[in-house]
Length: 278
Ligand code: SAM
Image 1: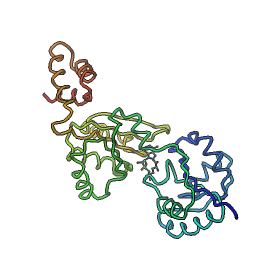
Image 2: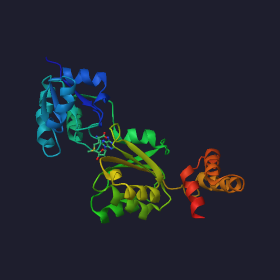
Image 3: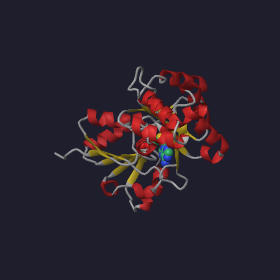
């Protein structure tokens, strides 16, 4: 009997074509079929690596129908790769139904890890990364967005959001209204691309920067927000404030904030902003 095939879930670059791993290149070249979110979009990547494997479209509108056919192909012995337009499939991208159906049918589903915008942004954000929450895209409508943000108001883990260029300003403004001006945040834009920028500041400062420079509203974004202070908390900010107050008597504010942050573990920006507000 013919052995059944494998479904490879392959991460692809989020901007820089050089970020496709050698193992991903080999797998995409060797499988019999690639299920791609948008075949025309993926053509540029595949052409860059001279990969001529046949592609079919698997997107949110046809995933249900395609699943049945693809699982039948896998059971008939075909090896198939799943890719999305960018990054890791299933992460705010199609593929969940196919993976579930393949697993349900006893097909081996294997990851081929690589780029993911959320993880890339977190890795350079400088915000606590031991525990975090991935929220994907916020609702497009302001009322629903604010409601969602309110639900997250007390979340103490670092929050990661995806955002598009036409809503980044509105989302920042809503976050500022719900989480407060002082909450630390990072706006990671166009990662791995020519205009990559990573801004870290309080929400109030970030919004001001985005307002001052319309380029900061162009492209693709990951927005990362520091978690709320633990109630009664681990006391890092309180300790940071105490140390900062002592040092400020002797040192310039920026130096005092830097040292107080290093000693207490509190975010430097939060301490510096406290100083400006006082
Ligand atoms: N599956 C992808 C991943 O693994 O990151 C995410 C797909 S989701 C449809 C697209 C969103 O990811 C964009 O709207 C943006 O929020 C984020 N994104 C993708 N590429 C990015 C990049 N180069 N820089 C910043 N954010 C990016």
